[in-house]
Image (cartoon, rainbow, N blue to C red):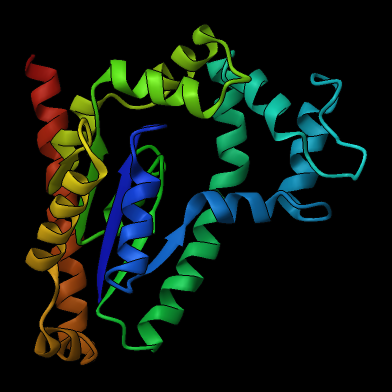
Length: 241
């Protein structure tokens, strides 16, 4: 089973790509954002940790129905990188567990591809388990315009901070196997998506071979080793620059 990592900055068009993969190509997409919302529902371990840590810092953290005020939490952590790291530390571990379980379910169903839709794929270290990685990017100006249109409640400065808090497009591109430029129309983006899927779609024989324990292990080791080597090369280049 090919584990296809899908990532992209906020308002880059990643959700459009995810929707296309599900509706047109009938590929299972494991959505990290959706899981992240589920794990912070009242009573869940991550919810309790967030309330315990941020409760005294954000006055309106809890809504009348007991759920988290995600807007207030987001506004607070994006003003403070250190607090954002704390929030990520609380949630990332739980998100990983849920995603791994859903990956296992897809594997048991003999699916040839499963997509991990993760905004912070590289930052969370989940790229290491991906056989192929696709990044969706667009020009910063377009990204800002889209974010302001999508979230009118955010000021221009708040939108800029949210974009700046994420990994740059250049760094994503270095770590990706395919890059989808989303500066133009949805139709053009769809054509690019379809082209990539045609290239990466495993054959039936490859999919079946991966279910032979020894061969499957070799495929997994090869994939992790290739991703590790990419990390190593990037670190080496950054030291020489």
